[in-house]
Every structure is written in C-alpha cells, then in structure tokens.
Amino acid sequence: MHEHDHSYKLLFSHATMVAELLRGFIHELWIKELDFNTLEKVNSSFISDDLREREDDLIWRVRWRNDWLYVYILLEFQSTVDAFMAVRILTYVGLLYQDLIKHQHLTAHDSLPPVLPLVLYNGQPRWQAAKNIRDLIRVVPLGLEKYCPQLEYFLVDEGAFSDHELAPLRNLVAALFRLERSRTVTDIQQILIHLIEWLQTSEQAGLRRDFTVWLRRVILPRRWPQVILPEIQELQEMHTMLAETVQQWYAQAEEQGRQQGWQQGKQEGFQQGQQEGLQQGLQQGQVAGERLLLKFQIQAKFGSLSPQIEEQLNALEANRLLHCAQRLLTATTVEEVFTDLL
Image (cartoon, rainbow, N blue to C red; front, side):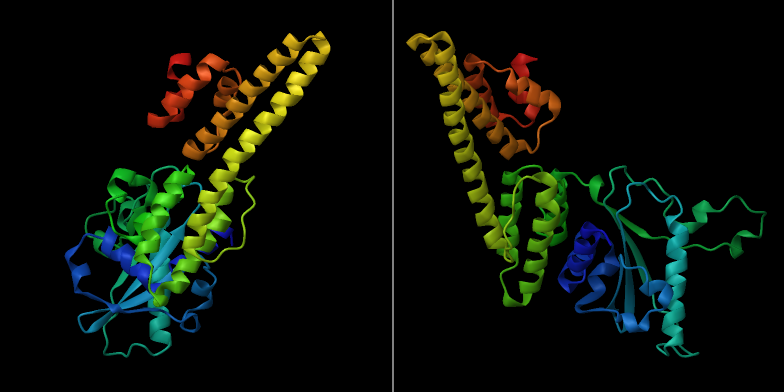
C-alpha cells in the first residue's frame, strides 16, 4: 500500500477520528442518536477474504439506540474518479451482510443492521460519479423498477471544502484536510498548535504519534524533499523542528550570500586588477546573497517555486529586492510579490 494510504488508514483506525468524521461532516439528525463511546473497529477475523484484502477500507460499528450501526469507510486515493463506485459499494455492503450472517451474528429472526457506506476521497478532480446505484441503471420498463437495487453512499470529497469552511471547525478531520492542502511552514505550524491543544491526554498518545508520522513521512517530504527530517514522535517536537528549520534556512541563505559575495568580488577584482573592481564584485555578491535570502523567505511562506517565479527572482536587481521583500509581508499569493515587475 502507498505510504499516504497506509498513514490515512492508521489515522482512521482511531475511534476519535471516526467520531470526528461523522460528527463534523454528516449533518443529519440520526448522528445525534449515536453513542460514540461504543465505537469499535470490526475485528478482521470476522471479515471474509474478499473484504479483508481491501487494505484501504475500514469497518466500524457504533450503538444506535439499542442496536448496532455499521460504518463502512472506503479510502479512495486514486487520481481519477471511479464512475462505478456505487457498484463497488453495493458489493462490499453485501459481503459485510454475508459475513455477519455467516459468523452467526444474526439469526433467522433478526433484521439486518443498518450500514453507512462512506467514501473518503482526496483526489484532485472533484467527484462527479453517481452516488446511488440506481442512477447507474438505464431506464427500465414500467413495473421492473421495483427489482432494481437502490443503495447510496455518503461522499466526503476533501477538495470540495474551502479553508474558509474548515478553519473555524474544532475538528481533527478538518485539521487533517487542511494539512493535506498546506503549502507553507507557517500553515503547518498554525494547524499544529491546534492539534497539540486538542490532543493533550495520555489516551491520545497513539493518535498524536500517528499524526506526527504522517506529517514526517508524507506531508513534509512532499513539500520540501530536500529537508532531512529527524525521527520524531510528538507533535510538539514537530512544531519545534519546523521553527528551527526555518531559522536554518535563513542562516544558510545569509552564509551562502556572504560566501558568494566574497568569491564573486574576489574574482571580479582579480580580473580588473583594481580595488574598484573588487568593491563592485563584493556588492554584486551581496545582492546575490540577498536574492537567495528572499528566495528562502518566499519558499517558507508559499512553498516550492515554479520555474517562472525562479526566473523572475534570479533577474531581480538590487533596487527591486527591497520592494519585493516588502510586498512579501502582505502578499497572499507568490505572484503578488512580483506584481509591479510583470
């Protein structure tokens, strides 16, 4: 299984995350009737081979009134939308019912328990596929419709939520979604502050660790592949490490600037054979160092730079560097930093 998918499964193997997912993203009255204290993961030994082989899916159950309600969570991380997801869901729910009957969870006098099929999707294109199997079946002759299956799944499309919608929520799953789309160290640090506050108890140690591992193995390498990350296990350590990393970037930029300025100035002065040439070369090297520092600052705020932005940055002269650095303080996009230069 892909590292990203495996990390997500670990996170949603915690009852707290499943409860937050249901409470925060399913706004239906029956949710209030669930006893989240009874949430338990269905033991894989009670699942058929067909379901057990689906490593990216999870099955939970929770008390609804005096009965069990099953939650089938399908983690969908493909790059394309599955147009026939409703068919897959129909199959998986049928297999789940079959297993419940097979392992004597149900008798001939019992009714089948309700099942909530939930698809958690984080792909780039927005989800457009039919959510009810009935919508995939062509028009049938009058009277035949009663023989057609009808089953709908609940979709949580991560990319369909804006940061404006997610930021006010005191919800772990909303924080997870925001971390997925974070682009800068500052974004991640701000969300980490909330997670550290929300996951303080000793009972939440496992969830804190899994969040930390997911950040270290998935999110941070995706944003800054050049950064070597230490083996840390706590969110507070992660927050501290990020702050130190930014400081190291700035120190590195300043040192490289000094070295580049000295070497360039020395070369210019040697070639011209004059003190004036040495001074001019040093000034040019200083500009190059300032340009490098600005690059690190922009990366810290907006993430990795496109080739077009890199080209604009490398072309900046001394009189434009300060202008761009000032714009960086209030810019909401990287393009705004260079607005007057376009």
